[in-house]
Figure 1 (cartoon, rainbow, N blue to C red):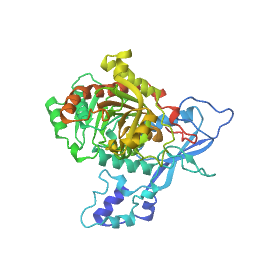
Figure 2 (figure 1 turned 135 degrees about the horizontal axis):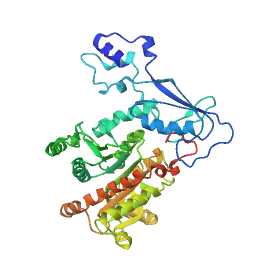
Figure 3 (figure 1 turned 180 degrees about the horizontal axis):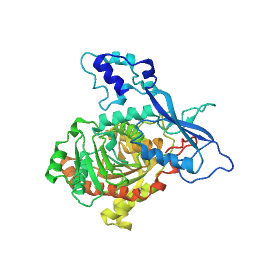
Figure 4 (figure 1 turned 180 degrees about the vertical axis):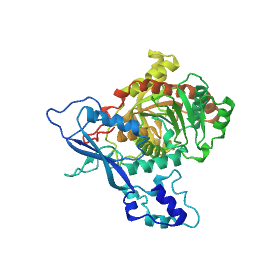
Amino acid sequence: MRDALARFTRSGIAPTAQERSAFRYPELRVDWRPSGSVRFTRRAWAKFQAPGLYSTTVTQPAFFRRYLLEQLRPLVDEFGAVIDVGTSDQEIPYPFVTEAGDEFVRGDLPVSELARHFPTPVLASVGDEVADGTWVFEKRHARPLSLFDALRVDFSLRRLAHYTGTDWRTIQPWILFTNYQRYVDQFLSWAVAELGRADGPYAQLALPGGAVVRRGDDPAAITAAVAASPWHRFQMPAYNLQRSDEQGGVTIVNIGVGPSNAKNATDHLAVLRPHCWLMIGHCGGLRQSQTIGDYVLAHAYMRRDRILDDLVPPEVPIPALAEVQLALQAAAERVTGERGDALKRRLRTGTVVSYDDRNWEFRWSQERHRINLGRAIAVDMESATLATQGYRLRVPYGTLLCVSDKPLHGEIKLPGAATSFYQRAVGEHLQIGLGAIDILRGELASLHSRKLRSFDEPPFR
């Protein structure tokens, strides 16, 4: 398809019918016909719900190689499934086969002319029916093998480059979300220090705009490259610190303020099948006993953000994941040096309420009763969306927030107090998030929880 595109844009020679028939994604098929007793596994993924044929289309197999093998090997070794690969009926849109999308078009050649001879993106064909559980099984048709098909994955890979400003290949499986640039600044200071360690586990840092700095580079050059990164050009800039081993590095994404950004980012990051995403940001404390700088470990969410109500109705509970909760608490103990009652005074577990309206305080007389019924202890705008998206898209999630103001008790966020708070608290908070990731790296077998699996779950996680 790349060759045909190059030929057409250069000389106007259109692809033949035989060539056009090859502009399709490969299809991966797994057939399971059990004989005898069915094997039981406590693993949350790489298992079948029912006998039969399962299939999905695949893109970027070199990048997803490790993930695909991780999912397929147990299906063959433990269940005796048979793997087959063929050509699907799903066409590959031409912008998805080049690194530059459709920017290779030059001169007077209109995009409409390309669309006459090459498949184009049809958004009506891109959907989340499998993830949302709305697909309908039909006899003599294959069941879904994965949550996302190739078309959905390719669409999101392009969106990730657009929004984050980084090559999607550099995004890491451990993701931190924040709503303040100051957390990114602290992350960069830590990342530069890690790259300066001759024996450290981290190898390189991918920056928004495409620049990459590596361990062993001149420290002044690293600092200059980080400072020159055009992060402000991108809506949700990402910084990807990659490891030299296979345990996976850390990505931090500044999603800004609001549930819409949170949904947008996670819709696309989910196709990479990350191991976990954590929200580390600021919140308003709702209890008199809280003080500025206290932490809130969310164990429940009151969803007043509304953005996912049609996909995951508000009455559906979003469970806290024990592995993530314990890792965050253990990391807080390690970073703060506080334990027992001393830690409980600073780190409180409870319900976080998330709004889509930053000025929710103007409706306090209407919201007071609901917040009181929910026993909420903190308020923000992103956490409930990120957790609900993790639940919906089967990505382990967690939330640790820092109280930056107490809007109901006269301690509002004013410039002087805010600056003092930021200088003191952000670095410690970030280190807790990074510490939790270090703990979770050793708990992958239990991290991908069965709590996130539905009745008709595809075999792939």
